[in-house]
Structures are given as C-alpha cells and as structure tokens.
Length: 110
Image (cartoon, rainbow, N blue to C red; front, side):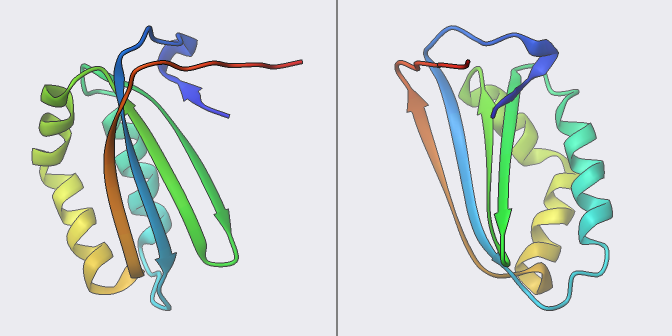
C-alpha cells in the first residue's frame, strides 16, 4: 500500500518514479542510508508518498511527486546523490528507473 505523506491522497495528475532493482552482495551501510534518505525525502515540498516491495533480493521502490520541479530538487540533494553512487558501486547488481505521469488513479480497500 502507498504511504501517503500526511495520510493525504493527492488529486491527479502527479508523477510516479519507479525504481526496480536486484540487490548486490555488499550491503554494508545500505539499511542506514535507506532510513536516512526516506527521512530526508519527506522534507521535499512536492513529495507525496512512497511504497516499497522486496523479495529474495529483488525490490521496487515507488515515490510519488506533485511535479517535475520537486523531483529535480530531490535529484540534486547531495545525500541522495551519495546514496545513488553507493548503489551503483556496490549495493545493486542491476536496476532501472522510470518516471511516469499518473493521469488517473483508482483505489479500493476493505
């Protein structure tokens, strides 16, 4: 389920950044950086929420954004840049990232 910032589901349109990955063997510092970046991203105006799924070394992290300006602000964050460099060097065997515009969204919960 999506962890909406302040438990507020946004109106469409908004953006989703989908990050899919296979974890590497050297995960030293990975969990700590994950916690730090998740805390930091909540401070970005325009960050809307996130969801994450992991199973057997494969994972997906989806972040939701109001606009491209907010995404660019996060992309330029120095700690986020450091996390991305460590990810490329050792935390991920492979990954891909896709930015999508959400034109409509439907939700159901019991």
